[in-house]
Image 1 (tube, helix red, strand yellow):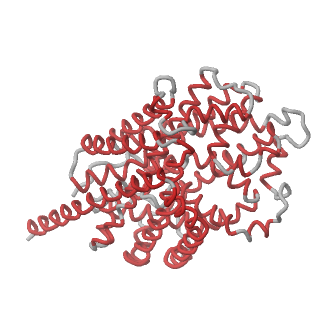
Image 2 (tube, rainbow, N blue to C red):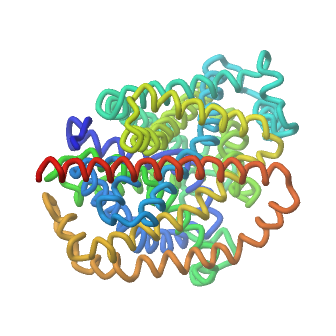
Image 3 (cartoon, rainbow, N blue to C red):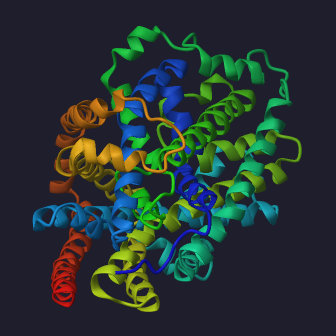
Length: 526
């Protein structure tokens, strides 16, 4: 079995992985988490989670991906097949195909919102005045007040058109393939994203105290996120709060795109001696830089500068949608040339969302090609039809964004822990830590500290199990009650289950195909 595609350069795959990781979570979710859990105090569990699960799991995915890719398999189930021929192991790989698609179904809707706001700012239609007016505008555009509002008013509500345009862009890029599609798109989109981030950061940092109100300067904003003086808790009290550790661990998954199978698939297109150790560390480092500097040190200080400390509360920061689409437009209203900065910011969010959402489609496309033998056009059309139906489901059940919240919780907060734990056990215990580390170190441009052998084999799995258990303890009772009492939640779970069943069937057919191919090759050799 020969690889049909590959990256044109090592830089290409690094940029693509960074693009997959850098998304809306960096600019909207991380600032809110950081401010809610004690500013600089949150950085301690964040760094611990990055060292114990983020970086190790990223190294594992890069290594497993390359290991399977050089043996002819680019899909997560195919990669697992190269490591263990047991069916129950390969079937688990279906999670790494289903999860990105579930996330894509609602993420593409948010991406459409970003595109819509970009266009609205370009047309000068976003100077509304107060947060209440922005909240009402957001509710109208997203259909939060009534199911089906976006679809039934498609002729007057531009949201559907923007979501459709985002959908087409994603599938056009994925249709063009690894080098001509994903790599080329990321090679221009990521520099544009960083440039927009830098321009906005410099502008906000040089505004000083634009309102003239004491305590609302950029320095005050930085002081807020670098100390815990704005809260009644000390650093130790923040660290004693289990929610901060759960939030940090969950965010590391979402931020680095690890556990979902995205990096696993991207790395499968590497060549045998391509570096994975330094490339992975570079991607993780760049993602954290964007997150901390352009997310944490930009968004929260900007809100404090123009809206005051009163705006930094759980209602504002607890939801990325409230912060990004209702609070920050108020900031741009009060900035000189606010229309320009609003346009740049939402264009930045659109690029960040696009580079992430494109990566979510690749595991499924590779499985359809790798396992069923479909051509690129056939696999893209099949996947496009499936995701169109799933996205329309999210758009229709828009009331209170319940469908979106349900799919997000079960994919990004529950099943990703299961998939991540399985991958790291597969690396450390099935492939074997000695074989795995030798594979990781082949072609490596940096030396991986020996302690990571023990972290990957023992500490990371234990950390994942403990965090997942705590997460379930704090969240599952409430979510189970929602399933019992809410029809939309039940239907959303049904969508998730239906997609998983479909890919379990695809994996079963793929196993037969791979097994037949191996028997045929053995017969030819004999």
